Every structure is written in C-alpha cells, then in structure tokens.
Image 1 (cartoon, rainbow, N blue to C red):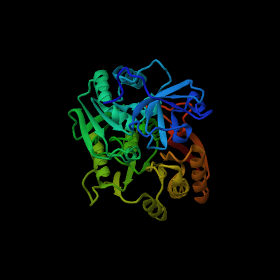
Image 2: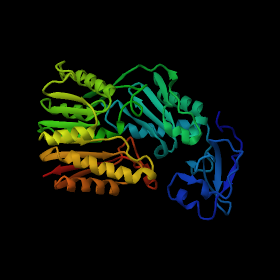
Image 3: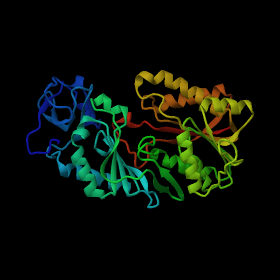
Amino acid sequence: MGDISGETYPALRLRSGREYSVLTGHPWLFSGAFANLPADIPAGAVVDVVSSQGQWVARGHLNARNSLAFRVLTLNQDERIDDAFYVRRIERALKLRRLLPEDITAYRLVHAEADYLPGLIVDRYDRWLVAQFHTAGVERQRAEITAALQQVLAPEGMLARDDIRVREREGLAAGEASLLAGSMPETIEVSEGAVRYLVDPWHGQKTGFFLDQRDKRATIGELARRATSLLNCFSYSGGFALADLVHNPSLRTVNVDASTAALELAKRNYALNGHEIGAAGEAGETDQHQFVVGDVNRYLQSAAQAGKTFDVVILDPPAFAKNLGMKERALRGYETLNTHGARVVAPDGLLLTCSCSGGVDLAEFENAVRQGLRIAHRSAQLIASFGPSLDHPSLPGFPEDRYLKALLFRLD
C-alpha cells in the first residue's frame, strides 16, 4: 500500500543549489544531491525535497538504496499522491494519445517520466493493457495504479511484465509475467492503419511489440512504393516489411533475426495480411519472401560477398549500450553494423539505421554511422532524422530519456 493518506510527507534537505535541475525540468535527483538520506525511509516512499534554505521544491518517490535516489511526481505542493492523483495522470496521458488516428489500436499509454509517472510503462493493445513497474515507487503503489487504469480505461485485462532486469537496480525481483486484472490472450491482433499485427503480450520483446517505431514504419512504407526489394535486419515480427508491403505488394522481402520464435511470429503476420509465404525449403521460403534465422552481421557479409543488393535496408538492432560504461563498445558495434549494411544497399537505395541505446546520444550515433559509410566507400544524403513519437514523448529538460535515434539515408 502506498502513501495515500493525509499525513505529512517526510521532508529531505538538498545541498546548496541542487534544486536547480528539478526546477528547470529534470525529473531526477541523485543521492549526492541530498544533505542527508535517512536509512529508515522505505524504498519507494513518497517524500518532499526542500532546498538548503528550506524552500519546498518537489514531491516524489525516494529510494535511498539507489544512486538515482529521487524521481519527481509533482511540482505542486498542494497535490497529494493518492488514488485521484493516478487517475488524473492517466487521464492526461490518454488525452494525448487520442490525437493518434483511430485506426491505430496499439500505442504507449504511459511513458514513465514523460507522462509524470516515473518508473511506469503501460502499453495498450486493443482492449488490453500491459504494464511494467520499473521502480520501487510504482511497485509500492501498484494496487493504486492498477485501480486507476481500470477506472479510466476499463480494459478486458491487464498484464504485468516483471521479467525485466531494470527492476533489480531498485531492489525488486525480476520475475515473470502475471495478471493484474481480467484475462489476457496469448496473442492480440492490433492494427496500424491497413497493416495488422499479432502481438505476444506474455513473452514478446518489450511488452510484445516495438510501438516506438510506428512513425518510421509509416515513413518507409510511403517511400518504398517503387522499391523492388527490402532487407529487414533484426526484424522481430516483420513490422517494417509488412508496413512496406501494404503499399507495394510485389516487394521482395528478406527478414533476418536471431530468434526462430520471432520469425515464426513474422510468418503469422504475413499470413494475417494476406501475403503468401508458401512452404518451400527448410525455412519455409518463397522467391518473394524469405525468413533467415541467424546473425545479422554474418548475413550482411555473406550477402555482400555474393553481390546481393536491396533497394531498402533496415538496421534496427537491440540496445548496444544500456549505460555509459558500454558506450565505446556500442559505438564500434554501430560502425561495424553500418559498414556491412551500407555494402548491400543498391545505388540510390535507402538505409534506415536505428539506435535504442540510452548511453549513446544522437551526435555520437551519427558519427559512428558516418564512419561506417566511409569504410564501406559509400557517400550518402541524410534525408530524415527521427526521435520521440507522439506516444513516446520526452521532457524538454530530460535528454537522457531520448533513447531512440533513427537516421534515414539515400546512398549513392
């Protein structure tokens, strides 16, 4: 049970000047910002922070066991963190998502700090919700958050995906998926315009689908109308390829992923959208559509050696750097991947290259890609750059949240 009574919240004093980042839009405070962190305050409790002069600054969740000790919930001293607070926050988040077209039935409903609910992720798949509780604060108030989601959206079911390692940083167990309310099917059919996808909420990557790539899928779909071939690397369930096929049914596609299960789901998505994949060959390939289980870099090297090229190449790898300590290795990885990827792009073809590494910023990623293009002896024009989408907003003072970067090039 969370801190939802009318009691006064504990007040913790900051060191001189440390309130500035919060007052200018950043939602975090690290342990070093505090004059003192009492050990007896439970992880995830709601506290107030005050300046070194005793002036009220913010109210939020505290976890003194984590170096990232405080996450802002409100800058309004009169706002209680109670049941009504979570209802208001979720209603506000839903209002933003209502700007999406009506034929989009899957989107991120709550995007943690950017929706003023730090540590909470909620994705909506048609009539069902899948949530992730990343921090001790939202875990402590799980019941209140679940009730608020039921009140605002009345879903047929809610699932908690606790199988995420990030919980361990907060002293929480990384367990299994479990029902919060109602029922949850094994797969859910959702739509992005004319394209339909099957989502695996129980076991799929993230909460079941890569919702943050919707706008990139739509852009590539529009631009690939006259393409003859597309290579979808790290394809997961075939999202980019299917978004292109809806505009260009004759497109030849190759989906490459290390996961057999992911490609099986991709095949089901092809069938769902009326694209025949046949049963020829051990991999179930046809001349038009192929599904290759394997390492992407090795596939790219082999394809280049064989002289294969594609009009559109998608590079959408998992995170190479989830923290700053992994940055240099990640940058080398992006350089290598884009070297191999550029070598199989046809003349005047398109290369969409992505990074979801929070430890790598846009300028660093672009530099790594540029080095890859140089090594591959390919000149290029940058024709689009993508960041957060409508349902994955970001706060102006919080650049750490802008994990997703995508660059679209036309190669010579």
